[in-house]
Length: 531
Image 1 (cartoon, one colour):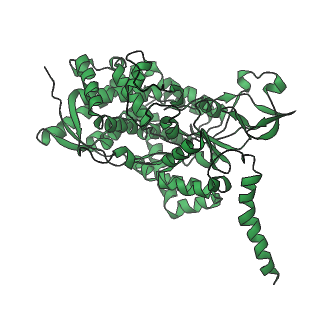
Image 2: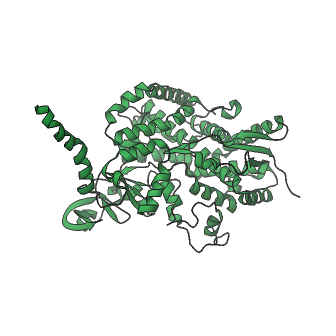
Image 3: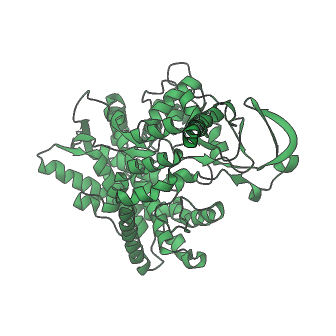
């Protein structure tokens, strides 16, 4: 009988009290958001695996404003100031005797050493949220570029930065140009074999050319994607793991972190990860055997691997981050740009005119030359705004002592993030946010008139390569690849959608932090030049 009386009490403790606490007593109780999201992490956890989280959270931001409580301990921001506050370095906030108000509640804190000042070396960052950033490739006690603590990350980044600097890119242009040449040649062969016009999956072709470039720059050997017309198995494997990976994150939101290792084992995820790590280590050993004078992006890290005591799994983890960042972002951005240009024929014609009137032969299309094409640059920026490769999930924890984000104090351990998709499509930041309008960036570059409509654009909201000390280290390479590949493609070929007026390809793509892409079928034929 005693157990019967205990059951209602247990129900009250486990089911009723947590939502009541989250609603009435939680430190974030005054931040706006849907009721169910404020009282329980379950709605957000269920939303993540649908692949439609960016669109739904954007809807919430349009309804509730620039700060939304999307889970009891998780705040989403679309205020452009949040980029600096969430991802940049800031002074610690220390306990103090002074009480101040923040978003409807009071707290005691002091900043900048009890109103003193902090030196640059004492400034801190909001750490990455372990729930999103646990490394799957490194040893349990190892670190890679993604999950390394601040001190080790700084060393790794400085070593890798040598290979991604403008000077290094100039030295590597020959390798990059070679694989763009192969891309154009293989695509031309497909067109010729089909009698003058062929339909191809542009997503696959963009993946292949970028992967072959990155294989050359990371491992000093290509992956053979363009010649074999397929991706390496570990890249395919990563794409297949995007949704399961988000499911594992969702499980941790609702308290099932302890189940994650068992789920990985049950679905074969652990075996897949071991195979992936083994292939990367094999390629790394081959790269190391070639010596340390190979001109590639890993040279700086390999020179210091013994000094830093980096294990092979840690090296493999860092190499995997570099390869994945390239293969899952640059091709996505290129595919998005192609799709947007196909759906806006007037913009496509304007870009082709710029490229074909500037260059008389392919030999003239260099990395420096394409960086001076204003409409090409504007199209790339606008496509990065409308179809960002990473849409959400760059989650941080407010640092010890808490943090100020967009003018609001949030307690330590609060999950905070800038919502990329919503930031890029917010009516508070952009005139006609769902319209592909490269001219808005032309005006910013001083190359054109301000688009009609009366409302300006908030360019501070657009951070396609994130912000702060952990922003994308490969941004220069990504820009160079996008400009060069798109310019060469439209110089040599005319492209058209397989179906005119069909469903927008972009709307069909699901997002699990990164995009899970379906084929983008495009008709390709040799360029017809006027005059």
